Image (cartoon, rainbow, N blue to C red):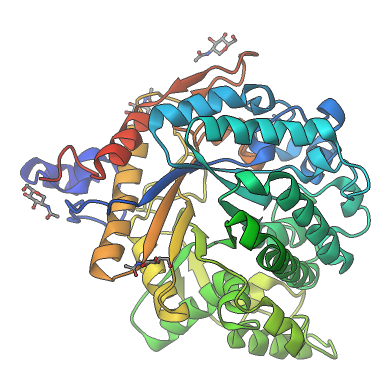
Length: 502
Ligand SMILES: *[C@@H]1O[C@H](CO)[C@@H](O)[C@H](O)[C@H]1NC(C)=O
Ligand SMILES: *[C@@H]1O[C@H](CO)[C@@H](O)[C@H](O)[C@H]1NC(C)=O
Ligand SMILES: *[C@@H]1O[C@H](CO)[C@@H](O)[C@H](O)[C@H]1NC(C)=O
Ligand SMILES: *[C@@H]1O[C@H](CO)[C@@H](O)[C@H](O)[C@H]1NC(C)=O
């Protein structure tokens, strides 16, 4: 840190001049290149994190309502999403913020239980449908396109009661819900996302990693979930492709999140450990969609460990060749959420005892203490990681169109002068531009998480990631611009990350 400050004095354009931490980007210069004309900028949210109105106007209960209400201590600050940013009543103010920033599109999610209180299509809640239609009309009136996520983790409790994402029936149930959404909203929607971040749904929700529904079925339930999430996504994609695409002219894909995993050294062992880890994290969901089937390293490692654990077959449920063919190619572009990075070194094979996805992946995975931390513990700022991840994606899956569907950073102390967020955005977007110009990676959109402060899952209101501040103690939930909203507005207007790109 001290070194950085000395460095700053002599060098005008080094990134360290607006930060206080070593993120291994010392000496990196923010690019003067500009985003190409036609590049799209957006902002993102998710239903449970912003809407509130958790039981209003006929909305059904979903697993986050259920889980947090029955385990209030689970959330760091004891808060809930019952009211959150109150977007159920204040969506017009959200759209006004977006208009002020000048974004091209808004990525938000539909709460399944708001339109189908029991998860099934036999009972449609008109008030819920009207809410989303009103939001879509408000966006259209303001010239903002809609990117709509069908599932951002809020499964109706009625479907959780029959096993949720570990019950094969969920595939057809999700497809029915998706079809209804295309029918109801498709005329307004330019881009659909079937499912957001399957890793969090399956390993967070069923692998005991602290997300609803809080099931701890490591190494078993989390793989069943992954299988049905992928089949559900594929079925919903095919319905859109065959029945709606020609009428509605939209695009549809799945959003996969991934950290970057950097090998600690250049040794073959560390590189293999890092490659294995990213295959278990990103490849697990991307390989079936972009190449076909689970990644081979997963098939091999889970089979091997399962036998040693005394199972008579692999814990990773295999796809039939029909299923492989059905899932392969169910994308219109590659959508990725990215926030942070990890180092990986080779390690002794994890003990053969209780199975888990984490042990199946192996390796010694850690973050460097020197990487600057955001408010949320795991969240360290590693700008170069996004560039390496994008290069790896191109090398692994080929030259696909890529949209960044989430990227952003939490506040540290609630200030409106959020210079650290401006620094984060500038650096991450600079590495994005490098990927576009130096590595010829076809990135066509960038989505900032988030437009307003909201309910950050088990971090509650501690994890504020908005470029507009929302006072969660104020019943009016006013939206107040942070400095970063002006910065992002300027990037969108000028296509330049600096004061000037001359
Ligand atoms: C950006 O432009 C400035 C001023 O012309 C120049 O000093 C700097 O080296 C440029 N940075 C890069 C990364 O090209
Ligand atoms: C990027 O992908 C889009 C959509 O497939 C395509 O229209 C465009 O030509 C591609 N751009 C480059 C530079 O390859
Ligand atoms: C809050 O964070 C900002 C940005 O990192 C910093 O400039 C400011 O000094 C901090 N304020 C307090 C009271 O810690
Ligand atoms: C938030 O709202 C509460 C209740 O209206 C008020 O007492 C408090 O001063 C507000 N905090 C900020 C930072 O505006």
